[in-house]
Image 1 (cartoon, rainbow, N blue to C red):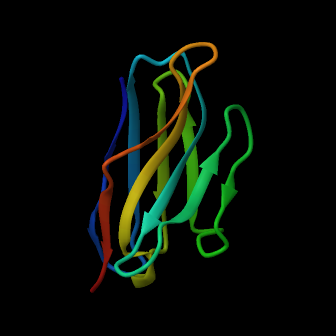
Image 2: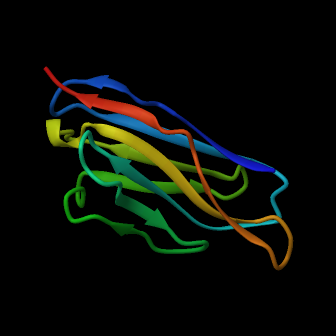
Length: 120
């Protein structure tokens, strides 16, 4: 079994910053892409940022220049640094990863989500 556990959500004022963390654990052979998605009330889940296995990153247009995704490959962790937060960033943020449990078996795994609320 493998799992992702997020942390770091909370209440922050507009213009503030938060850093989300996500740790992968379990029977892990390797991890390909890790990323963050979010779901606001009444809306569909959307991509925030992804980080492929070795280089590069992708961001939603709405967060470019404000959010930064990073990974610690040795610790099987991914982070999301969120700056200049806006009320419209309020959502439950989910960690996502493509995890290989053996050389040939891959699973798409989701975390339980962490709530980020941006409000004065």
